Length: 577
Figure 1: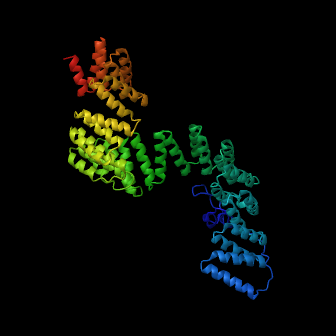
Figure 2 (figure 1 turned 180 degrees about the vertical axis):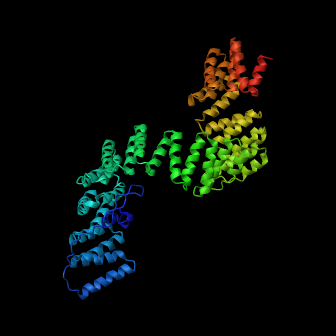
Figure 3 (figure 1 turned 90 degrees about the horizontal axis):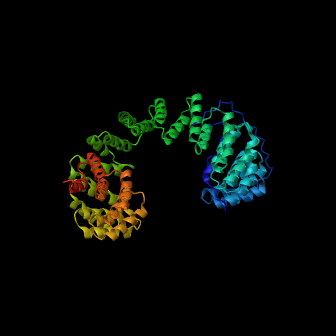
C-alpha cells in the first residue's frame, strides 16, 4: 500500500501555481512585476453520448447515499464501476476523489489515471496523480505527468517548481529527487526558480559544487532575489564563513532594503562572534521595524555580551514595552543584567517576576542565592523549599544550592544534614554522595567521608573528583599514604588536565619523599592556576628542597591575592613564625 499525505492534495499544489496569478515562493522574496492574467486555454470536454438507464440511476443514487452515510469505500467502488461503463470523465473524477477520501491510494491512482485517459487536458487530474505518485515513492511514474503540466503553462513553470520541491524534499532518496528535478528543469534554462530548486536538491544530495553553480545561475537571472543570495551564503559558510559574509555584505550594499537577507547576515555575524557588527545590523533592522520586540531583544543581548550594560537595559526595557517578547524571558535577563551591575536588589526584583517559561526554575535558584547574599538566609532556604522540582536532577540541585548557601554562611554541619536528608530519598546519587562526603570531611567525620566517597566511586566509576578527594584526604592527613597516592594517580588517569588533581599527585610524591617529582607536578599545577592552596604546597616543597627564597616569593605573591586563605596562612606560619 502506498503511503500518502493528505496535505499534498489539500494544498492544491500545482493548481494554485498554474490557475492563478504568479505568487512569490515564500513571503520574503522580492515579488515579480505584476502581469496581466492570461485565461487558461482549455480544450472543450468531449463527453460520451449515453442514455441514462434505470440501472445506472440506481447505481448513482447508491453511490451518493454511501458517500453521504460515511462509507466512502463503497461509494468509490460503485463510481469506479460506473466510470468504466460510462467512460465519462466527470464520473471518473468523482470516483477518483471518493477513492482518495477513502484513503485507498492504489485505487485512487487507478481512478485518476482513468480520468486522465478520458480527459487528457485535465490539470487537476495530472496534479493529484503526480502528487500521489511522489508521496508513494513512485518518482519515475510521476515524471511524465509533472513534465506535461510544466509544458502546458511554460510562463508559470517557476512558481510550479517552487511548490513541487517541498514535497519532493521529503523523499529519502535525495539523488533520485535531484535527477527528477534536473530532468524537469532542463527545458527552462532562463527560469531562475528552476535553478534555485535544483540548487536546493543538489545540496540535499551532497552535490555542493553543483548547488553553488545552480544558485549562481539563479542569481544571475534575478540578482535582487533574497532567497538565492541566502542559499549561496549558506553553501559557502561551511568552508569559508568569511566568503559568505563578504557575499552578503556586497549584496546588501546593492539592495539595502533586503531585510530578510540582512537578518541572515546579522545572525551569521553573531555565529562568527563579530558582536559589534552583528549588533549594528540588528539595530538597523530594529530602526526599520521599531515595533519588533525580538529585534530589540537581540540588540539587548548583544549589548549585554559586549558589556555595554546601559544599552542592554534599554533594549530589554524596549522589548518589554512592545509586549510581544515573552516577559519572563526578558525579566530573567534583566535579572542577569542586575547581577552584572552589582545591583543585587534590582536583580532579585526582576528574577521574582519570572513566573513561567524556560527560565522560571533558573530564576528561582538565582533569587534564592541573592536572598542569602542580601542577608536573608532563612528566606532563601524557604524560597528553595517552595521551588517545585521537575525531576531528580533538579531535586539534587536544589539541595546542593541550599548546602552551598549554608556552607558559605559558615554552617557546614547544617549543610551536611541537608545533603544527608537528600540521601535518604536518593541513596545512590553520586552528586549527593560526593557533596555530603566533602562536608563530612570538613566537619571531621573522616570515617563517614570515606564511606560516602567509596559509594560515590561505586555509583560512578569514572568519577575522577571522588578518587581525588578520597586520595588527597589521606595524603593531607598523612595516613595510608601509599593508598592515597594510588587513588590520586587513578584520578589523574581519568582527568589528566585537572589542575587540582595534578596538585594532589604532586603532594602525594612529597609525602612519599619524591621531591623532584613532586616539584614537577606542583610547578605544572601552579603555572596553570596560581591557586593559594597550590601555592602553599609548592612553597612548602621548595622550602624543604632548600629553595627558601623562591618559596617565600611564591607565598608572598599568593598572600597578596588571597590574604585570608586559611591553608596558605597555616603553611606560612609553620615555616615563617
